Amino acid sequence: MNSVEGVAIASRGGAPSIFLSNITKAYGETVALSDVSLDLRTSEVHALLGENGAGKTTLMKILYGLTQPDSGQIKADGVALQINSPRDARAAGIGMVTQHFSLVKNMTVVENIALAIARTFSLDLDSVRDAVVAASTRYGLEVPPDAIIGSLPIGLQQRVEILKALMSGCSYLILDEPTAVLGPQDIDSLLEVITQLRSEAKIGVVLISHKMAEIEKIADRVSVLRRGKVVSSSLANGITSKELITLMVGEQESGVVLRSESQSHGRDPILVLDSVVVKMEIGGLNNVSLDVRPGEIVGIAGVSGNGQTELVNILSGTLSIDSGTIAVEGATLTQNTPQLLMRAGVGMLGEDRHASAVHALQVMENLVLDCVDNFATKVQLNRKKMLEHCESAINQFEIKATAKQVFGTLSGGNMQKVLLARLFSRKPKVAIISQPTRGLDVMATSYVRSLISKARLDGTAVLLVSEDLDEVLELADRVAVMYRGSVIGVVDGANASREKIGELMAGIVR
Ligand SMILES: Nc1ncnc2c1ncn2[C@@H]1O[C@H](COP(=O)(O)OP(=O)(O)OP(=O)(O)O)[C@@H](O)[C@H]1O
Ligand SMILES: [Mg+2]
Image 1 (tube, rainbow, N blue to C red):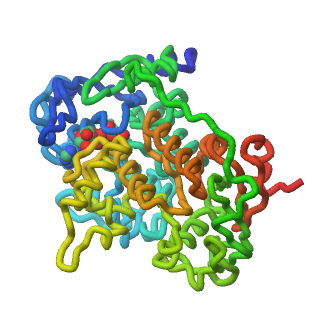
Image 2: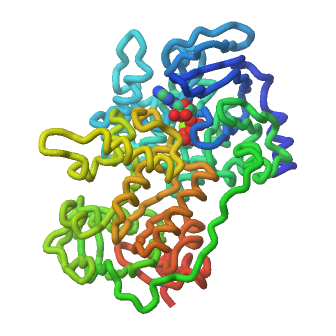
Image 3: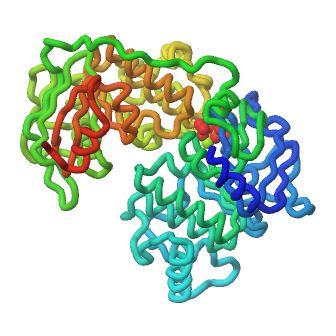
């Protein structure tokens, strides 16, 4: 860690003023937190780490009043706090931006903030608007005050959430995996904002993240949770990423994926896109031609917003094409509807795992959502067959959940494993996989990557879209770079240099 700066910064942290003591919380048989104690101070960035399911979100939801502990205590400045709701938490100076935002989509930025800061009396919108503008300048969080939330990109919605918490007057701000939903540039500017909140506004920030690089960059203190227990809490200064990973996972080896020879040479492509055009006011696709062979991973790299989302959407059938063709195994699709694509053997892991699952349904129901017919008799669903299918998937994919558990209660990593199990258990000929390891811990990330490699060895044609260039370079046999809606170049994965890809990402072709 950055030692010199680390010491200087750490000494800025105040005395601990919030103490969580002996917090225990169980959900049925799952013990999410067991006798956890943690203290927080202002003017400090406190990183909270741990594998998927370690209990990070649960602990912070307790502090923010979104859920109640079975036992334990929270004290602020020596006084016991009774936090029964987020309102109580905000009154105690604690704010939180959760993994799923709580903004009202069809209202404006100012209206959303007014809702949050208006307590017992109503505020006039003009004065709230002035306050929003002033606060956004003060904290370096620029937002368009009159824009409708639903029309804003995720990075801006997140800023609104942060502003909302700050304007409610918090001294502590909990951010639950804020960078998991952001592209590289937005991550950098968020990290800057966090540093500024700590140093200038003297706020204590709790940062939950799986990304070692950002923790190294900005954390003053690091606490690690493992299976519901705090295994370490200390100043960040002096701890290496490797030590942190060992603390998170215990002494087990992390699975390293080795690249094997591509099996695809000389084979006909399974997926062929020819001169595909999608016209849109902003974005779209401009003459995209691309092919993927069986047993090959083609990675898509590019600065986000250069057509990657549109590419995934035409292959899931949610965006229709204006001209050009999509062919699977030599047969040109008459239309790119979800049904025709699925029937042709195209499977999908979408970027937004919450959109492709039903949180209120069980794990086993989610697992068969797109192939319910296989489990239906004339009159009813064969739940016994579904259960067997699910139990074998839980085994095979090492999912930490039970078949009948409600999907929405799974940790992020385990949700992703269920969706991958759904994709791969259908044995698709072509798998379109978008941002597969977003929000996943180190072990889950390497596991998911090994699943993708395995699918390639089994002969699946994989199109991998990822904002993580390391991931693309680790997995892809060929890397296609997108720029302004076109594939601007394709390079060989094994010999791809970052410089070459970086140039293409910037639109430079030599
Ligand atoms: N409402 C709930 N009902 C049942 N089990 C739950 C519920 N909320 C959390 N759990 C379980 O508690 C454990 C801790 O979950 P938590 O969400 O706190 O993990 P996390 O550390 O935030 O993981 P991630 O990094 O994946 O977000 C998990 O085993 C999870 O399945
Ligand atoms: Mg979490």
